[in-house]
Image 1 (cartoon, rainbow, N blue to C red):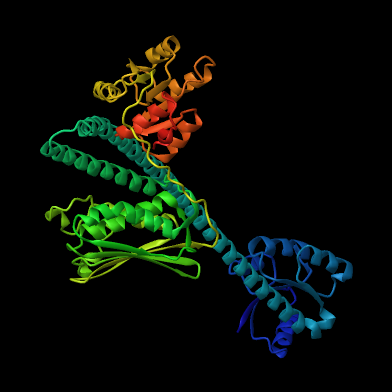
Image 2 (cartoon, rainbow, N blue to C red):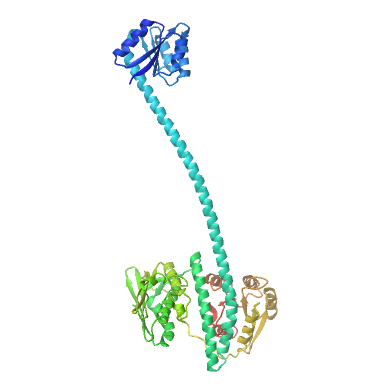
Length: 543
């Protein structure tokens, strides 16, 4: 590639000699001559590839020429070609930025010096271009990082807002469901309580049948409330499980014992088969809930005279529990909706009772216990549900169920303080205690009057509602427990909140029992018999 050189030299002979020497060295170049300052400045207006300069020019020293070149084209290599520069000055010029120097009596080295200067200049240009490109790339990357950081900050802010909104929505939903639960359970307590009392009065058969309809409808509504709350707790991550080794055969037998009366009414045979050594790691109460849901469906949707079977088998680290029925079965397109909340697959048109929540809840409970629930079905042949749970290789605590305590007559005296602001529930409690003539019922309609009455009358038992008009029931319990003069009085808490978390919290705060609305009047009588009458208080753990 041809290069353009500017040669500052006032001696024409020397200029021509330098040009011939360069061409003789094979350097393809165009040499622009300059004899004085003006020529040199004009030549530099179009920056050359290389500058050659004598050190001694009339009116322009080599030092001045070098400074002028540095100002106008700082990146162009500068080589002195002089016979009078001397080694000391040459070293000084090199320190000041000159690329090289060549003595006029040693022009045989000029070609090498020029090539080296051009090569070094090209390397500097490439290096400068690379550094410029790198700086530009760094600037672009920094801009992208800044932009990305800004986007991430904005996204994080959006996520924070979304999380806050979700937390607020969950809190609002939990508060709403708790309120709905309380508002439904409170009147349901009176409905089912009075119905239970009437059922104990020896009424005519048709009246008993009517009352049983009321009780079944109340139990259906209560089941719906509980299942909605359970699903809500799972979705919000507030479901508390107590995982422990649970005997499969005990869980199966428990569910079968509860379901057999319902199956017997339609001639449906129910059976179970599980090895006694099979244990699963599960929450005992929730496993029972799953099996009862599945067996209840196996009976409700079966044909008269059909069969429902529970089988359990171990497979490595898991246990499979299958519930099989001989009902009508379901087509494949309906199986995808089987675990959808409130989806009853047309059963709502058959008159069969149900909420459409049992299977959805059972599947989620199985997942919460690190297991699964799946379904297979064939039309006209029946349905098989399969629960898979982690296997446990150690025996757990065997739950012992105390036999029920009779609640017929009771011959003892005492008093019960009932702190409750709902008039219907007060009347219900009055009617209930009418069956214990020796027990006097005292009523306080709010927390403050209840605390005052407690100190005056010293009852044998306090039944405390948690939702009072003037203060929370928990605050009343705290004051009772913190006062040495009242601390010894047993307090049974009455609440529409059926969550296990609330039960544990209230028991830890000093409650001897936790009664959930709507309560079973026979269990309440057993509690009163146990505490006021001194009988074994099997009912004191009511939940």
